Amino acid sequence: ANCNGEQREWGKFFHELLNAEIARANRYKYSFSLIMIDIDDFKKINDDNGHDCGDFILESLAKQMKSTVRQQDLTGRWGGEEFLMLLPETEIEGGVALANKIRKDIEATSYVFNEIKLELTMTFGVSVYDRPMNIDKCIKMADEALYNGKRKGKNCVVMTKPKEKPIINRVDRTAESG
Image 1 (cartoon, rainbow, N blue to C red):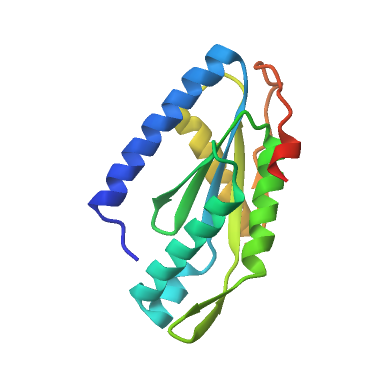
Image 2 (cartoon, one colour):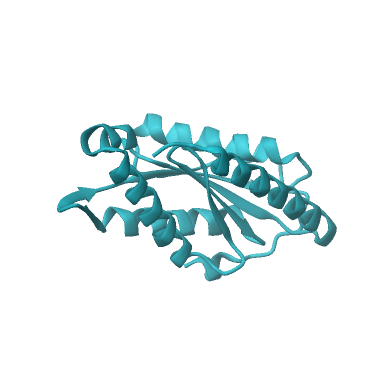
């Protein structure tokens, strides 16, 4: 499972979509959530079973996550074994609820590649865009939450702690993520 030129192009395109979402959020005064996701111990999967198995796992997880989110939500591979989700009009509580649902679904699923049965877990970092900031800061907040989860022992969901009250109107979408 390697990051190639096509993956870099997807990353640029996804970044453009994120910036467009910021413009919409600012214009219409709503928040959105970002979820940074990392496959726990993915290097071991590749080392033990080969890169074809790693690619199978990446594709399987992408399909599984995509089938769980709303049509307007975006899920993309962010790099290596990381994925990034954009959840428009979703407060952090809705992002955390969705991340927990996906985490439990993946933990309960057995993935079979060439008769090899694999059990997986993932760690999730959730941030919210609820005040003017650039997208890189919002991504960094999700990434820091993700790595706090890794330090806590993996297979968990960690959200960023807002330092100040949101200044964009709250739109509760929690019920839609469930």
